[in-house]
Amino acid sequence: MALIPVTILTGFLGSGKTTLLKRVLHESHGMKIAVIENEFGEENIDTDILKTESKEQILQMSNGCICCTIREDLREALQLLAAKRRKGQVDFDRIVIETTGLADPGPVAQTFFMDDEIAETYLIDSIITLVDAKHANQQLDDRQEARRQVGFADQMFLSKTDLVTDAEKEALIHRLKHMNPRAPIRAVHFGDVPLSEVFDLRGFNLNAKLDIDPDFLKEDDHDHDHHDHSACDHDHGQCEHDHEHQHDEHCGHDHHDHEHGEHCNHPHHHHHDDDVKSFVYRADRAFDPAKLEDFLGAIVNIYGPKMLRYKGVLDMKGTSRKVIFQGVHQLMGSDLGPEWEADEKRVSKMVFIGIDLPQDILRQGLDQCLV
Image 1 (cartoon, one colour):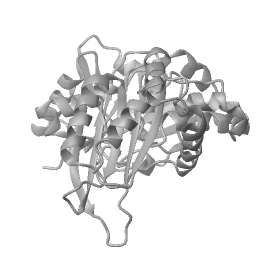
Image 2 (cartoon, one colour):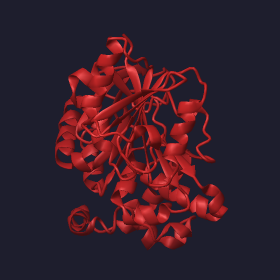
Image 3 (cartoon, helix red, strand yellow):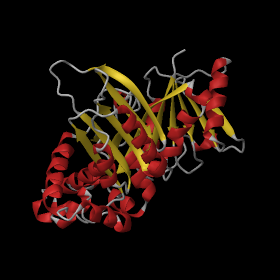
């Protein structure tokens, strides 16, 4: 039986998650969607019906969608829905989980990897994060949960862009891309999003595409260029030493923007130094599989809780196929992808998104895993 796709909807308070959900539920799209709302708040889908004291309530809606509001553990709700579906009591083709405004999507995503029964029934399609353009900078400054939601996203929707200037919107997009260059960012008006951009995004598929914003890659090159020639003239040991004490004043490319502002095309970006950051690693020599496995295993053991999302398409010694790996926190999976084309340059690319990840240690360690 095909696995049931799951979309995790997360986002800042007031960013329009409920508006988007209502639209998805009430539109006649022919899909049967089960919604798990992980909160009891003012903004429930239909406050009148959902005021209930029981642990969960399942509602059948006129268009065949169902709505399940829970106070209990997510796993129990997913098992309950699967059991009712098997018995023919409810019918649905996919699930949307709406998290609370300040929830960390990490544990929600991990539920689908750690529990065998859940993993045999469901498959995460993607994590969608709604960002309120008007209040985003403040929320990102104040709340790590908001920054984590950005780091986890496979797709970001920017709401309330009509309330900010174009320059403010561009500055925000720039900031979000530094935190997460994997997720496309799209401005939406009042939750008005084509369903093709909400479902079947396959953000968790082990596919051979590593979608990173091309502008980010250009900047990344530009930043490292500086980093190699100026910010790190002192020996590498010193770099690591600084790193441990004050998150790497001389080496991370975001900090680097602060120090060398005159070279940067985005002067408005400097005052944000978010703890959620991303960096891209590239290599044109193949990896030694055993060394890489040991190194990634060790890194995930130490930094797993701070590693939000990471993905790579790798050139491994000993195989003519691409090796694809990705992970959430400590959970990592890999797979063989398609063959490298005869005329294709065999380059490994990885993107890491996390909280204060030690870029130097990762880069140096990965370099040492190359053949």
